[in-house]
Image (cartoon, rainbow, N blue to C red; front, side, top):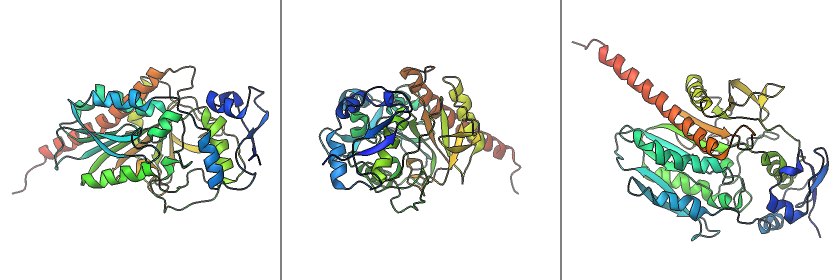
Length: 363
């Protein structure tokens, strides 16, 4: 029996070549309805459908060459440590974190994460570029932890999900509340999220100052992932709009407006900022300030940006498919976001220290 779900795809041209070849989809008018090849309409996937989906995945990048080899070159400057591996293929998919050499108990921590969604390349390469170019500027002040590629299987297969068809960036709080119809809902725990949480617990950091989680929004979010998600969950696919430009995802319970503005201003020097759509939204979420949307507490909905107690935490979103951007620009935009985020916090702390220094001492 062929497992079939029909989904109205915004742009079938956007399907990745390997997947297009596997299911026989060709270019067509943007309004044409195409068949998503897995599942029964209106029924969530079971184990069989997930196995069929997994069987269609193909390796398209080299994690060892593009990520691990670059991390190995950093060993003279940082502590590069393996913190786990993926059981799908432990030898092929070791998990690595990079720590500052000057790690000390009294310093606040900074966490930079990339590749939670493995297919989002600039999140991974941007984190590595930050390590290569700017990270050492902050290690005297902060305990710096960079985890460049949380989902190496997704990196190689250019997939948002992990090998079990679960979204790692919804899996950091599997007991969170699910609200029907909401685009941000927690999913089951994954090896990727569990390994990171164990790593963070082992470090016993008393104070996290900042967490920047690096992501992309791509055309394939609409042409591939969202139709697949609708099929997996047994719901109707409703087309959306992909924003052209960089934006941030803030915590609506902790907006940190000035900090987010500083990041947007820093990134603006490298790439363009996404405007709202005709309804004043980005990815169907209200724009709360230029280039920023806000979602429920990331911790409550299982996002990676909610894994620490940092007062300053955000998710970046680069748009690599824009005609105005290229791969290098996207990587540099991620670095610009990190640098702007850390510079704002460092300057704020210096200002506070200076004011305290001018306060009259108590007699």
